Image 1 (cartoon, rainbow over the protein chains, first blue to last red):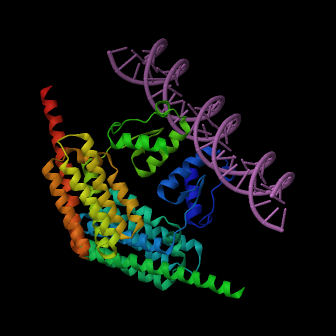
Image 2 (cartoon, rainbow over the protein chains, first blue to last red; image 1 turned 90 degrees about the vertical axis):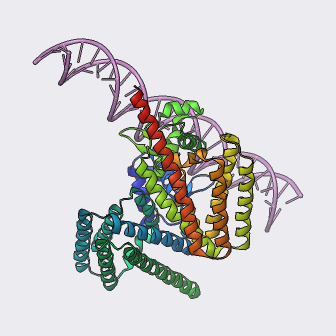
Image 3 (cartoon, rainbow over the protein chains, first blue to last red; image 1 turned 180 degrees about the vertical axis):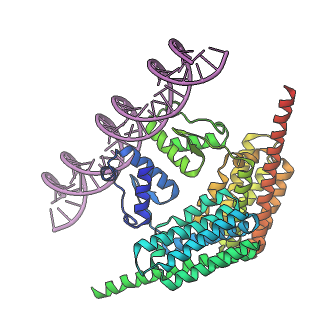
Length: 223
Length: 223
DNA sequence: CATTGACTTATTGTATACAAACAATTAAAT
DNA sequence: ATTTAATTGTTTGTATACAATAAGTCAATG
């Protein structure tokens, strides 16, 4: 569905900010459609929890710091499990896929210049590729469904945009450790490495949120 | 949404069997609505994975044995996590709620007569109450979202209907062990007990599925 | 007899129309 | 001046209408 992707992307990219009401008519006009497909897209987004119903219509969901913490806890659980299962069920072609993703990742961060959106989008995509390869290797097709719900969240999705070169390289190193564990068929090691990886991501996001809060506080004082 | 509940219930109760196409017009007529709200309900069910899109329209999703196994693995992970977190974060009122659910459970199974639908529905509901109380005590509001997706699945939902008195009593005993662990603030013990509880449920379902398969095979031979 | 092709039918997907609910603004009364 | 009432306007929710596409049937031809 086209309308679905349009609205979802606008939400996770922050174009539609939390609390904003989604007016069907204006959305319809914006993408040259009638209200009918717009409403159907909204129902899907509602089922995924990206928008919340009001008395009439819906608004973009706001995620609190606690939400982010809880969501990351679940992501840690799910991706850690995926990594441990991958260490058990991975085939040779799975390993190849993960290695390929990591090589692309390495290339992408070597070509990275601070705050260049184009190269960052590549990194985001390649990072996703690695994580998805692990899920595929876990041989549990339902994991993907759940992980997508803890990743496609506005703040989480954009967290990549405030990484620096060093942090990206560090991230690659952890990827290599995870891959090594999966290759050696060490489920616990793979799980723990993935845990640490995701938790670092969580701290990264929370630290950034803290900074934003402080900026707002300074603004308040400046008035 | 009323249309949503109508269709969802029909699917998880097995009135709409896997593979069956959902004809919008006939559904609309059946519940005295136009196609518009029906279609919106279908989009939600699609987002939840209970129906799958065809070239045009949707059909009720079929869950294979592997699906069931994978879904139960995830449920084990999620409910085990919920139990361990509940052991850490539970308040006194959380404990009260769980105890109350277990007392109701005990009453419900004492009043149970084999294959009496009325009393079974009560048991299903009270069982849910206990599991939800644990999720509430875990203090992670997002767990519920994910667990609901591994519970509201046709075969899983109906699995209760082929328990006997002894198995129900046994189930209650495990509930008590889980509660004890949560009361004593023993996260690992709570997690493991919950694991075992869910895995028993899984085996129960898979065994039943095996039986059904055998019945079908016998029918084939009889031809 | 089977296979291809055109035509007919049925059902979906999208647009529009209408009714109901909520919000907002203005007027009236205390 | 403030609060209440009423009326107007905007937006959602549902129904209907229309267009597009897939499927099924029947006939025609190899």
